[in-house]
Structure formats: structure tokens, C-alpha cells
Length: 300
Ligand code: BQF
Image (cartoon, rainbow, N blue to C red; front, top):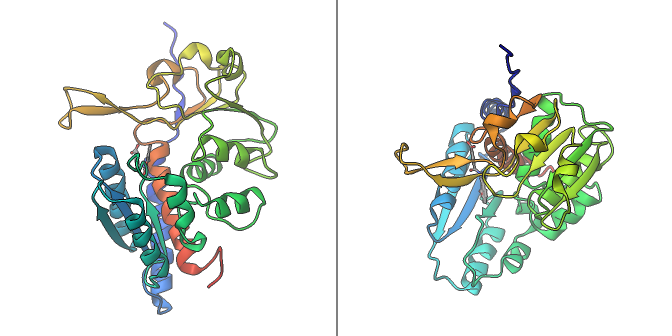
């Protein structure tokens, strides 16, 4: 009988806990020096179930590392100007080091306008175009948490990237576009040759089969099947979709963009969903908040 070599699991949950331990130590140091605790605020508009979960992950993570956190809940009937006023208050509140506006926002609110209203020095999600521009220019910047978390994961698991072919599927401003930039730039974890694929890519499998590192962020459960993956590739699954599941108390389970069971035997390394990229996103948000508290990106 042939044994299938299981891809090594890239355990983002455990790694995120390790990083959170490191952050907690730094918070202890800060407090010893007479500093107050870093303080993250999150603005949640409406009560979408997934958004509620994500915000609660962030609040709980703050508690674990010794940060203060404030959750600002707003009704989904709020008009854009009222949300802008809340952002201005947070921008001007010296007790808050950084804040996020949980996405997605209701359709009647223009997300670009909202993100541009956030003071770049408090923009710990790194979504303000000033932070995007600074990142592109290799200046100190808050990097978006999911791409930063993926880079950190590649780094801590010592996955080689120099000269590797990275194939990214999905060109969103939050994941696909920035991870393509970070892995193509000079130095480790970078120096890769990056192909950015999207909905208009012809013969997608001809690209994915050539990937040494395949990063998938399309939001379609099971989109990547075994026939699309090269033997020995590293597979990073950013997808996280709620799928109805009667066996779960919640009534759903989380599914990634990769058909894990069939792809894992072919992969050298693979991220699970849940417990892969998601927890790394949280760790990177905390990292950015610590940077904000220290004034490490924009000075004090
Ligand atoms: C895990 C997000 C899509 C759209 C908006 C841990 C998270 C998720 C999964 C989490 C995400 C996804 C977040 C796991 C934050 C990641 O154990 O696998 C943590 O909280 N995330 C978000 O804030 O907005 C999103 C995905």
C-alpha cells in the first residue's frame, strides 16, 4: 500500500499564540517603563455575524497580550457623515493608539472615503493610501494584517522564497495586491517571481501548476483541486467561507479556497482553515498596534 506523505501543516494558530506571547512580553516592558497599555479601538457598523466574530477575535487577542481595547458599535442605519465624526473623535483621542473600521461596511457608505478619513498614524489596518504608498516606497508603514501575517508565517517556518515562483490568485487591495508586492521585493521573505492571477486569467491551472508557493484568496470553497497543484508546493489558503453544517452547534463550518483533503498529500507545506492564515492576521494587527503605541512608524 502506498502511503501518502501529508503536507506539513503550517499551524497559524500556534504561531499566532507564540507571537502574542512575544507581544505580551513587550507590553510588560512598556508598562515597567511607566507607559500605559497600548490601546486598540474597533468600529463595528451593524451586526453581520462574521464581522461580529472577527471583532471579538480582535478584542480577545487584545486582552491576551495586555492591550486595552474599545469596541464602538454603530447601527447599520448610520449615515456616512456620522461615521466620519466617530473617526474624527478616534483620530483626536490621545488615549487610543490605533483603530480599525471593521469591513465590509453597509453599501450606502463609501469605504474609500471612510478609510481616507483615518489618520495614517493610527491606521493599524494599513488600508489608508498613505500607508499603501509608504509600503510601496519601502518607507516605514503599517502593512495590511493578512499579507503581513502570511509573510511572517513564511519567515518563521523558514520557507525559502528567493527565486521561487509565487502564484497569487485574487487581486484585492487587502490581500492579493499587497502580498504580490511584499514577496516580489528585495530581500527575504521576498526575491520571488510573482504571478498575480484573477478572474480574467486564461487557463488558470497552467499558472497554479508552476507555483512553488500558491496563495489563494478568492472566497470560493474548494476552488483549488489537487490537479492544479505541483508536487512539493507550499499552499497558503486565505479563503474563509461559512458553509452550512448541521453537525456544528453554530450551524456552519469554515471552508478554505483549497480542497484540503486532496491537496495536502501533494503539498510540502499547507495552511489549514481554520487555524492557518486567520490567526496570523490577528497577530499582525496586534503587532501594528504595538508599533503605533511605540510611535515606531510615524514617530511620537
Ligand atoms: C481561524 C476577514 C474576510 C472578510 C473580512 C482566526 C480570523 C479568522 C479565522 C479573523 C477576516 C479573516 C478578518 C481564524 C479577521 C481573519 O482560526 O482560522 C481569526 O478574525 N480574521 C476580518 O476582520 O475581516 C474579514 C475575512
